[in-house]
Structures are given as structure tokens and as C-alpha cells.
Image 1 (tube, rainbow, N blue to C red):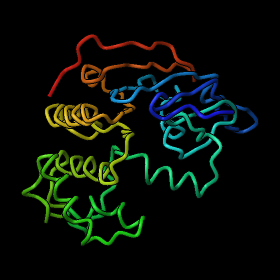
Image 2 (cartoon, rainbow, N blue to C red):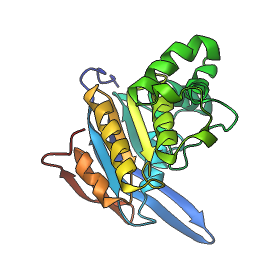
Image 3 (cartoon, one colour):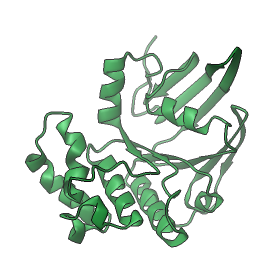
Amino acid sequence: MTETSPSQAPMLELRDVVRQYRVGDQQVRALDQVSMRIETGQFTSIIGPSGSGKSTLLHLLGALDRPDEGSIRFRGSEIGGLDEDRQAAFRLEQVGFVFQFFNLLPTLSAWENVAVPKLLDGTGLRKAKPRALELLELVGLGDRAQHRPGELSGGQMQRVAVARAMIMDPPLILADEPTGNLDSKTGESILALLGDITAQGNSVVMVTHDMGAVAYCDRVITLRDGRIGADDVVPARVQA
């Protein structure tokens, strides 16, 4: 089969994706025949009650897991069946992750935390430092580059995490409850920052329970019982 040209393909396309798990003696479908497209430069939120399949979907999009059935294509190329080595390469080169609990290394400075992914492709910290400092300036933390996580607020730590997600220049950013541990004002600044990233041509997919976050997105996908219950375009999202 001929691959779709990356310039013509959506950032992500899922077709009839199924992911199921065994719980005791029962088979549970976390995702049940899910089909969707994520376009380039789109800020998409995925919402739904606990157990609806949000985290499972995010893991599949980031090649942290594989579907049991169906197809997942990234810029026209199938990623649903990648082996572990190619999954790891895909995550390193194509995806930036932002987590609820920041996942920063406490003994490293802010710029060193941002540069850590560069170690995985053989780039030394010192060589990666100029780009790490540039990204910290971008997220408003140029004056905190030498501070360790323990010396930063929650919002500042999340900004470091966003900068780290961008260090490999990935086209796709996946955010798992990025405002979950932040106050409302700080959370709004993180959402605005993620919105700015899409303006640069990246795609951001965010799982959230925060309904206020929806206003910052271009699109809202609601999951219910492993299926897409609604897929709505936000008429005019909040701009930074």
C-alpha cells in the first residue's frame, strides 16, 4: 500500500482502534472502535469521566502502547505496530510529553532538565545548553535557568516541563492533565503557552478534567465508555 505523503496527511489518524485489557476474568474494552483525525497546528482536548479511555488514548498516540485492533497513522505512516526500538525512536524524535506531576530531576538545574532528552540522542548537556536556555526564555523562565526544581513554584516547574517537551522540536505535544496541580491563574498561563505552540505549526493533544481548559482549545473530543461521544470545534478559543 502506498503511504500518504506527509505533507498531505493529518498529524494523526485513527481508524477503528480497539484497546482492551483483562481485569480478573473479564475483558474490558478501554477503547472501542475509535476513529478520529488530529490536524497539524490544532490544540485538541480530550475530556470524559474517569475510566472513559482518555489516558489509554493518549498512550496510544504517543506510542507508549499498541492497539489490539485498528490503525494509528502519524503523518501517513503506521505507528500502531511498531516494535519497542522503533516506538522509542518515535517518542524521542516526534513527541514531547508534558505530565501532571512535572517529572523533573531534582538534582538538575532548570536548563539541565530541559536538555535531558538530548542525552538520549547522544548530544551532551553542554552542547544542548544554548537551545535549552532559548526555550526557557520562550516560556518566560530565562532568569531561572540555574534554579533546581525545589527552588521553583509549581507553575514554573510546569513551564520547565513544557520547554523540555520542545527540546527535540517534535511536531506533536501530548499533555496529561498539565494544569491538574496548578492554581487557576497559573493553569491559564500554561494553557496559553500550549496554545502558542500550536501557532508555530505543532499539534497539541491534552487530556484534562478541567472544563475551563476547553476554552483554550480548537477542538474538544469527549470520550464515553471507550467511544467518542462528541467531537466539537471551539468557535473562538482564548488567545494568549
